[in-house]
Image 1: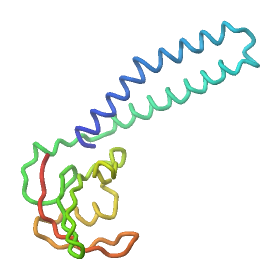
Image 2 (image 1 turned 180 degrees about the vertical axis):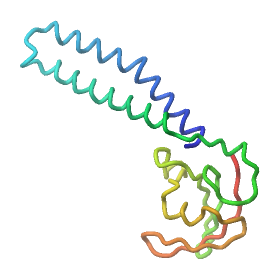
Image 3 (image 1 turned 120 degrees about the horizontal axis):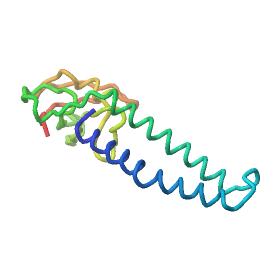
Image 4 (image 1 turned 30 degrees about the vertical axis):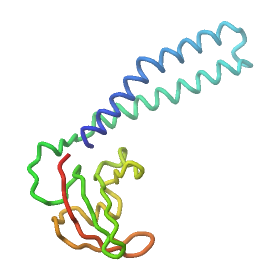
Length: 153
């Protein structure tokens, strides 16, 4: 996991524990005051929401507890593609240049050009160096790229 990914998860965990959890507890208390719990839809909805919230808290704590957080800015840039780097690629056929950061599965977001370490493109890039030409097998077929730059940002 990258430092940015860990920070995002910590912020979400803090939000869940300090804001969401107390809101749900208050909603359950208010629903209890309405009387019969067997037929109280507000109570059941609040309890269900509490279950989702607690599950997400446990999930995030587990991920952070087991994560190996890698700060790529502290690793010397050798021009080799490793986890956490930002890679600039040139599609040889279309002459289109793209940038991707290689991140963990939980951080992947193609809209922000963050691709999972387990994606076909990232797997094809890992270990390669600047100015290498590589072929990546994608769902749309084989695409040839040239690695233009490897940045540790």
